[in-house]
View (cartoon, rainbow, N blue to C red):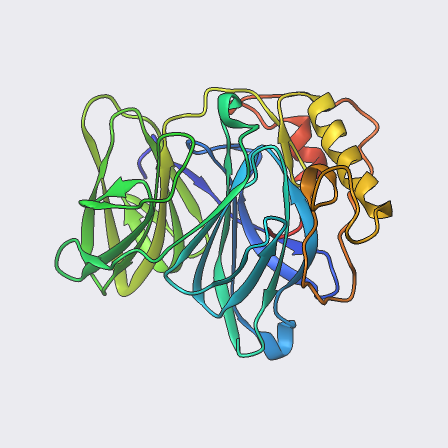
Length: 336
């Protein structure tokens, strides 16, 4: 094993709501909070929807982050308070930048039989944490990156392929499929740290064995660098997630990211205040205050209420130790 690499074993986390759904979570973890600005990695499926009930996540809020939805199979209907109505399909990225505040819902479509994908969050740097919310969709081309290896780059640039979706820090995100026994040398931009999430099969990353569901983190290396990813005899599919180290301290609680306890408390209060507002009313034109209103969702509950804040002050922390804010709120957020 390469002692410079860090392997994070997933833990199963049940998500609340009318349809219980279990995901495998590798970030945040006790060992690490971020890889670049990637701060949340949920991996789920393949789930037989007839048994699991699929995905049904009622309207819920976000701020200070961006969500990146990537599917391997199935289809999910997305609605948000900007008025967006879009589908998440395999091989097509949906990136929702929450910025100062947004709300949305996600429901697997009636035609979905198997649901399988990853839900990822990006922490926005402090200079961009309050940007206006936006939604972007992109279907990245499949590119060949060697014998038996193909890739789709959904964030940033890699293997000569560039994604046009706008992000607020230097990042890369890609799916790589390796045929049995195939290998690929992944160039790592100077100053980047990189993580490899194994979706199917198993791989060897610079001499370290990584099994399905595990996340291996490659630290920043000086100068030009690369990482060798080799598939087992059964082949493999992985996600590559990387970027410049965040270099900031933050609080992540429930579906909010802030720089202080007060940031999170204010976001929670703004979301809870919206419960009393009737349709068509609110503190701002056309919506229910800071997080707006999701129209068209027809689930069993109208919205997901925020949990009660813990009885301790949430302290912002960096990447060297797991913050109390993560411990208090990251175990069971709404899937976003």
